[in-house]
Length: 172
Image (cartoon, rainbow, N blue to C red; front, side, top):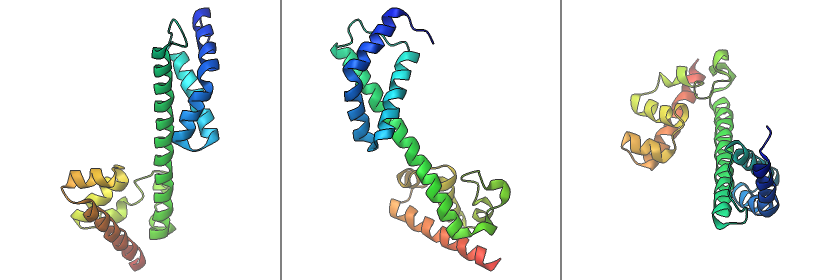
């Protein structure tokens, strides 16, 4: 992507002025140097894609905009990794609970769908909790709000649902 000369110079100036500050912000959020470097690169690509331009790279408005961009980019990376880690831990937990025989082959790579056959055997109040937490990927708080129960109740129902699914597997 060829940049107009003014925008090209602007991006270079921003890189020289803010790259280290952006890295520190990203590192504070992500706690990983490689991810922080990726966040800085992603933020600059975003600046280029959106054709961001200020008259002066060292203006307060420009600095605020760039730091907000790196903050948002870092938070997006953090949330994506958090979600990926939750899926991995759910899959590992599912295999520990259900074993390989319970996970039908066509569902192996479809997160959230793994428990569907087992979920159907659950009483409705447990099914609803598992559906919210696992299939819809809601947080415990969101699940509690949606179902009109306490967070402690959500956690307990989820624990009991896993136990019921484990017992259902053992009976087959």
